[in-house]
Image 1 (cartoon, helix red, strand yellow):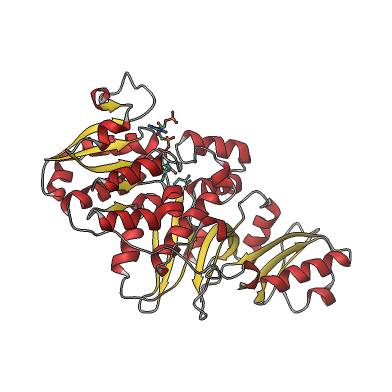
Image 2 (tube, protein in one colour):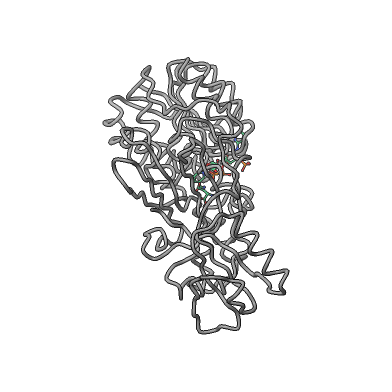
Amino acid sequence: MAKVAVLGYGVVGSGVVDLFYKNKHQIEKKAGEEVEIKYILDIRDFPDSPYKDKLVKDFNIIVNDDDIKVVAECMGGLEPAYSFVKACLEKGKSVSTSNKELVAEKGAELLAIAKKMDCNFFFEASVGGAIPIIRPLHRCLGANEIKEISGILNGTTNFILTKMINEQMSFEDALNLAQSLGYAEKDPTDDVDGNDACRKICILASLAFGKHVYPKSVYTKGIRDIALKDVEFAKAWGGSIKLIGSVKKLDSGKIHISVEPKLVPYSNLISRVDDVFNAVMVVGDAVDKTMFYGRGAGKFPTASAVVADLIESIKHDRMVFSQYWGESTDSNYVEEYCKAQSRMYFRVDKMNSDLFGDVEYISADDNDEIAFVTHIMCIKDAVKLKIKLEENGIKVKSMISVLDID
Ligand code: NDP
Ligand code: HSE
């Protein structure tokens, strides 16, 4: 019989335990043996939990118990999650985590320990919640050279944008609702300011290109500056504004990577992904475009991915199936953000066709302001254009790049 421990009994951890007992029979069939959750670690008391006999507060009980072969880490944050996961792997216990901060900051090191200790470090739940993306990217698309990955990687912000746009809900009410549904991070500014999506695109980039990409090297901008006027102009143009994490491999071997709101044309399925749903588009040299879609956050959708990793670990005991990437030693690996190329959307307060140049104007009903989309240009040149417009008394209210996947 395989004995499992769950670290953290919050939204995801309780989902893991509930889902496990709901589908225990089927899970055991897939794992190939009987499975039992022996411990649940949390700092809080849960006197009403049906699993209160399994609750412990001392991590040492788990790490020192040789019966425990597999651990699900669902506490979140860097510490003590990092120390606990490292200690488990060093004892040869496989770990499945939903913690993207941990993977984005310490993935290369933890994967190396897992490999050395003949156990697995799995993190399917760390990107896209319920969406199978880590294993498909690593295994099913393994024959491809990955060219580009772009998508909606944060459920909370997509949920907020959808509520604000479709139901005219205020930002605060939409965020409160996302929190009450268990979607948001402990510190929701991580969602709103793009840090959570940044960690996820770093994980995907590391996996796709084999070198650890750290969040600090990624240009990251959240949804705070999106105005309803931009949303209206976007609709009139034929698209929507979404928070997009994106990475592209350049011919130079470097990568362009960013998290920022982008104008997504309706011709791209991502533009129609609403609510807490996420969507990731992966472009490979053999497959062309593939799309992965599903619930990006929430108790059971996320637990689904964590439990699947537990099954995989139990089934493949002592066989290392972990996805792998190495430490990054090249400090120039990430290309400067301002060298990226894109069409650019501008919203300005005055017309001046001489200064705007050859652009596509957007007509909207309420047009006391002007919006247009440029041809493909370097971000550096877009910034120069913005400065030039402002020097000429034109206020630039928004400047947003367009998601064009070619
Ligand atoms: P929660 O805050 O709901 O759960 C975390 C639990 O771990 C809490 O009960 C917390 O207690 C407990 N905990 C914290 N520190 C310790 C410790 N030192 N020892 C024991 N228990 C501890 O978070 P979530 O379940 O929402 O998220 C967990 C992880 O999963 C995060 O990394 C998150 O980013 C990720 N994730 C979350 C998703 C979601 O939809 N919620 C989706 C995908 C990933 P206390 O509350 O007292 O701090
Ligand atoms: N806060 C995250 C989100 C949880 O909203 O996407 C899932 O990773």
